[in-house]
Image (cartoon, rainbow, N blue to C red; front, side):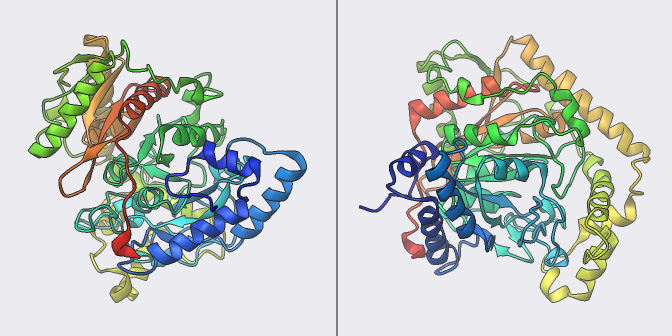
Length: 485
């Protein structure tokens, strides 16, 4: 009897590996066959950008190690995909979906990649993404890159995938890998997690190292797990968390990292938890059908002991307007990253990327590059602009102190609950953590999720709530993919 890969979890894969029912090499082959027949044929889901040419060799060696010495831990022999802005010092490229960086090789693994390798994970490949984390141009569809093309939503191909970690979410949803790593600046884990019916953990900025990740915003960027279950996401989180002295943001996590986040996988985690719902502003874009799904989720939480404070409105919600922070930080952050690629790098500056695109417009400029041009020519790259400095301070004031901090203190809350990813605008600027969990589907089959959010380093509480909700609902279902075969 062949191993059932669809919806397989890390614990049941490890049990099968330990019993000899399957090997890591066999597991990689199963995923590769699914990718070939379902991601690259038919309507072309297009979630995978590149396959690691050494994946089978790595899996084989990990099988030998398991037989000789036993597994290193829960991630030993587990195939994982990385978003294409995460450096791997191997035979794969790191391009952020850009043809300008299609031939760019990183000289060193990202800090989190080295931790994954040390834990025995198999880097299966790179996932497609919205080019430059959706900071190339206005009106680019989520999940599109000039290097990889358009990622499709497997639940409903007329529905967006969400961005920018589109490939990371869709690949997990379609069982093309066990788990994946995405990155978020403003909704880029939560948005595709919501629309691909997966778990997405957007950690506190500073919990996970950003070293070796092609940046968008120095103040808001973070990597995070994407998985089909909260347990799998937390097992991956355990590996990603580690102190990196080269990332200044990590100084705030000193003494606040947990050794094992699985301790917080509590089925009764909702019982007694005080959860606030910011109805004002954050519900304006919901359809009636989505609102029904959200309210049903809240009813379930109540049934399992949650104390729901509704509404628990964020007083600054409507004051949070356009901010120049990301625009100003992009040029400075990207140029610093590119400068570290070495003298043989295909491009060395943001200006080089713009010029490359201008020389290859048919291939690279389907939707233009207005944001790249704005960042290059309307910002100094030195972060000295008064509007940047003022906006950064205002974001912290409105999103942290007078926003999330204030409402949680006022109502003595353990967490906030948002529909879909609609709270990401405030949580991302605050640098605060969130977890999105599947909460059902519309009549058209489009996934809908709910997002638990809280203050900095409150991941343990969010894990309790997300796990308890997941265990009591089990809403997630795999896409059929029948029309893709």
